[in-house]
Length: 113
Length: 114
Image (cartoon, rainbow over all chains, first blue to last red; front, top):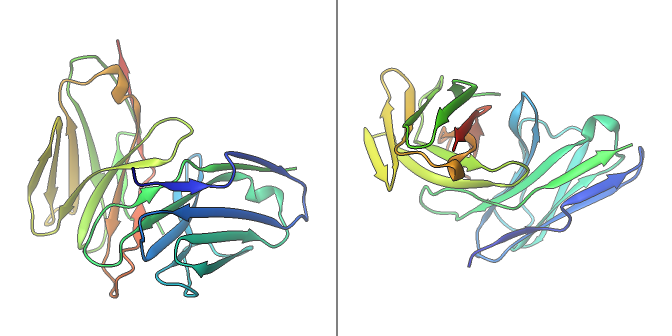
């Protein structure tokens, strides 16, 4: 059964902390994505990666960075967490060739106090 | 930037009825996709329709695409309580390369009452 897993379902951090959200997929997908989901705003793309060590900014990259050292793993980093980064974070992956649906992880609900 | 906009924002029906959700978008697309999200969970891909297709079926799902009106509809027939979820449309605008970046709408919350 194909899977996208995220390191935590729930996370509580303090303002100013550095936060790492990990995402792993076992489908050998080239493309990986990080979204945040907020009520009334839907899903917004933060960053995506189409190959190892490659990354591109999405619609709302400010305050975030990413790392993709291995094909199966895509990490989202909050350099200095702020309360406005409290959100549901969703990771997704898709293959590199041919249009197909994205596979999503279960999400990480991050609360920044 | 928001591309797809679903309508209605919320829909409540009885089990056995059909549910129709609509999606409008603004720019040309390569394909349009529909996803389902159960409360507090990740999204699940339901169906993809390419820009040169007009209708597609998958089980109890029927999707139509009208590129001249820049709109799509998702029909769920004979709904069940388990269909209760949020439904999102997402557009692949095909800006080039193989990134397959999607832009999601804000979703329709469907409630199916037993």
